[in-house]
Image (tube, rainbow, N blue to C red; front, side):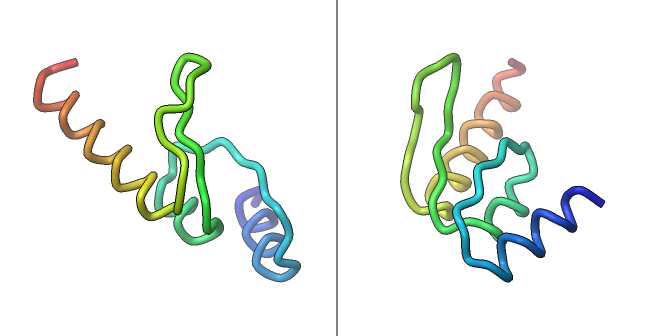
Length: 67
């Protein structure tokens, strides 16, 4: 329910949306730019497709290393 409200509000009004989510597909649908933070540092900032792509690659690398 909350996600549906956020999605409708963001898309209808074209406003700035600040969200924290592990749902990278949702971020890709709602946002044009993103920031990937880690332990208080900015790992990557830029177009949402670039940020989510880098985040997915990092998660896959960690998974393959067993971390």
